Image (cartoon, rainbow, N blue to C red):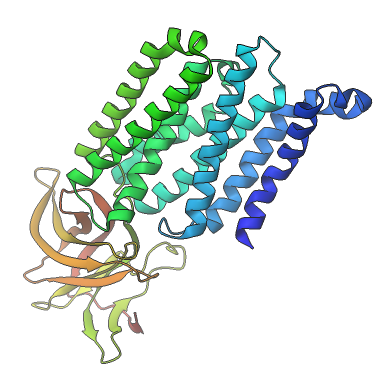
Length: 382
């Protein structure tokens, strides 16, 4: 059902494209329709991408599901096919249909929106704001760079950026593990695919592709280099991992059912995005628990860390006081559950961060310890 709904967004484009490709003069019999399309074509594309982004935010949930991958691969293929058709039109020195340019823009926009959603589920704005800013700029710029859609080099660069983003997401899912070697392999996979595409374009029209080949290779190398810098500086979100829940608890007890019984202080009504209150009333000499639930795709196993940090008012810096590693296994929709505890805790600002082994932030909760305070405790099962 979801696949049908997703592809229904493309149906109006396909009908128009079929009319124009089979008979470029067919719209001449409908002057009002032709005038409307020419007048509102930019706005129709913007509305389509916006509604597609809203739809995708509810349907693109897991990078290991078949549905998500069908949609992303479909947009990659549609955009690649559009670039190929544009090259053929230019080779024949024919006027490029406006709708074909709109189709490429539509595919790029929805592909970027879908990937931004999946990356957004994995990262935090605090840890990955630079990447999200650049990705968001690409998505918004897609609506204001219409003149560049006539340039082959722009097409290749934009397509490779999206291809590499998808490759970095899906290769760890396919291999069932994370690591520097896996990320490098995802980059190598994207290079094989993009150069295969360049070779196909060259075969179609060498006279058009040859003059831009050096510039295209430079742009590809630049994009790949930036992705590697983002990865090794932990700016790139830790795809395909994502935080499902994280909170600070007074006690955590594993039940015979496999679930956990936790005792906590409820957050204020306006803190709907938190699992527990940011003010923690601590009983002297008792431990504090950080409980997290981390989603990982099926068959993916890796290790993560709980990093306990205290904000030092004198140095105005966060000071690491404990790092607790543990292993997680993928497949559970609500995430793999795990917890750590910290003793010898004292009043002040604290935070517990969930990180990958290389320090990329998956999720974080910040709280304030109040010694001797009295809070209203609640219980629930996770």
